[in-house]
Every structure is written in C-alpha cells, then in structure tokens.
Picture 1 (spheres, rainbow, N blue to C red):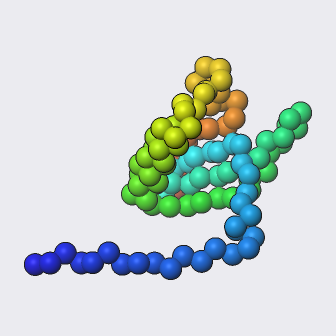
Picture 2: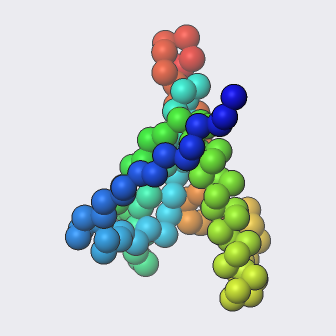
Length: 110
C-alpha cells in the first residue's frame, strides 16, 4: 500500500495580515478540547493591555506549533546566536504575562 502524497495547500495572505501585529504579552488557557492563545500589547506606564489577536486550536495542533516554534528558535540561534533572556525566567514570565490556565467548560469543572 502506497502512502498518500503530501497535499499542497495554497495559503493566501491579505494586505492587513501581511503587515503583522506586534504583541509583547501572551496568555495561554486550555480546556479539555482547546488551547486558547491571546496575544496582547503592553505599553510602558499603562496599567491596561488590549488583546490584539486570539487563536484557538486543538491540543494536537498546539503541540505541533510548539515543536515547530522550537525548531525555528534553534535555527534562529544557530544563525544569529543565543537569544538572551534578561532577568530570572520566572520573574520575566510573570512580568510579560506568559501564563497557562485551565478554562472550565462545564459546571462540574468549575
């Protein structure tokens, strides 16, 4: 039995999306069936941040994203050098909003 050939997907990129959106804060939540990524922008001396984009994906796709992002970070660092993390990792993560929380889906889970 021959494996199915890889299907090519034509991905379109609109003008607005091609400009990109800057985010310096990410909040990650999950339920049993979804991973939710909120990307926000925090400005200095401003106590509020606005979510710029929300991405909802399956846990499997989130794991694939994690692997692909890890691969790209390794390639980036091999080309440009190690990415420096200023400050303690725990303090840095808390300061820029990287967190993981569970989102209750039913009354029993609350």
